[in-house]
Amino acid sequence: MPKIVDWDSKRDEILSATWRVIARDGITGATIRAIAREANCSRGILGHYFTDKADILGSALVLSHRRVGARMSAAAAGLTGLEALRIVMLEALPLDGGRDLEAQIEISFWGRALGNAELRDLQHSEFDRLCGRLRGHLVAAAEIGELRDDFDVELATHQLVVLIDGLSAERVLYPDRVSPERQTQMLDRLLHSFAAPARAVPGLSG
Image 1 (cartoon, rainbow, N blue to C red):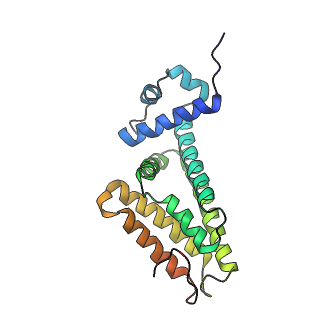
Image 2 (cartoon, helix red, strand yellow; image 1 turned 90 degrees about the vertical axis):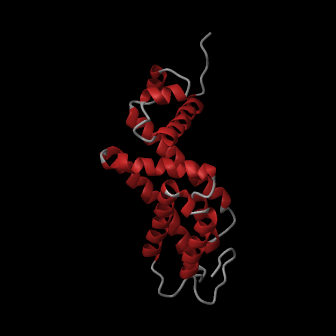
Image 3 (cartoon, helix red, strand yellow; image 1 turned 30 degrees about the vertical axis):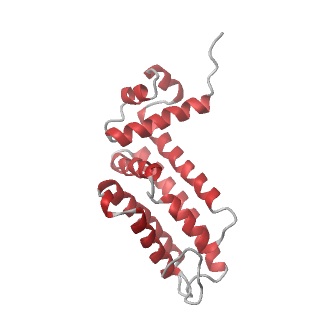
């Protein structure tokens, strides 16, 4: 009787193996052979789940983002405005070992995307998705009067994304410079600059 394989589970196994290879050997070291070896399967098995290496890499990136997004939604459940935004941002920053790995994977993809139009388009799509989430929290904060009267939602959204990308890059390249405490301090200072002077938001420091 043939072995029954859970398609989604096996696919996720391969993608998790891909993350480990990228984190250990870099994006150039994430060859089909290396991924298959890490996933403890043959190259032929990979071909059942993915069309080529670009498909594996793109799928690994998307799955990583979806898992981060799920964490964000769970952590911010029941919260709104700047309080919810702060929790969401903390999930996006490399504050522990798991999120350090996510940052390594993300940064590794940047160089690859420069020379691959398909991966670059995927990066742009994922960037837009993140911006939409952050923008939504800012709009909610504005609606309940938490933000300054002259607040620019689009500019602030960009600032938040740049903070995530900048701290992620620094954490990968210079981990000693950006401790979790330093990252949290920078986030809180930025969020505090968004807030209306009369509003105190839980979790934010001045």
